[in-house]
Length: 96
Image 1: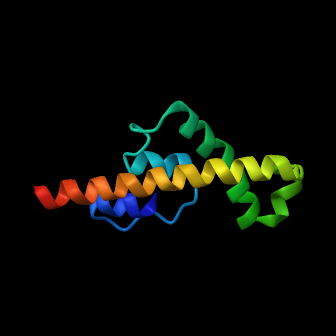
Image 2: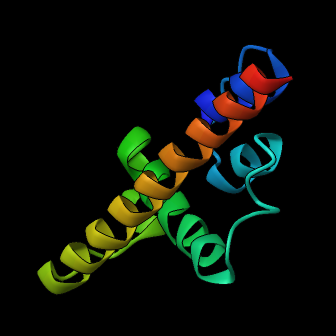
């Protein structure tokens, strides 16, 4: 999403890790399905847990293996979609 911010605005992306805010700044949120938006909201606290382990007990109970496999699959699909959007943005920029 930070690459999309740079692609869209030409600016250095903010030093934040809040996925919904990054999606908004990248102008991807407008193109995302409700399912994709739900996923980034679901992933957001997991990112906080990874970056700030002292909060892990307050934020999240250990997820099951099945849940982890499913969220990784969904995140992989979202990553592919974001990469496709970057290609579209790049093509649009080159044709202007």
